[in-house]
Image (tube, rainbow, N blue to C red):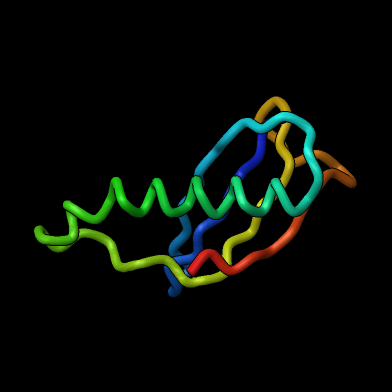
Length: 82
């Protein structure tokens, strides 16, 4: 299954991360989403020394994706990553 994490940077700024996960319970999926978000942020941190992006807001939105589109009635949730 493919999932999309929507990051909110404020002032209409957004970013997206995609990850794949086997069908698991929602709690495991939340842990995976937070891990993916932290991993992405750690990748971005070095660019901050050269006026990189600010840190995304603490709440992220996760949605199930298939063929580049959100799955209707699919898995969706919001969670705080920091």
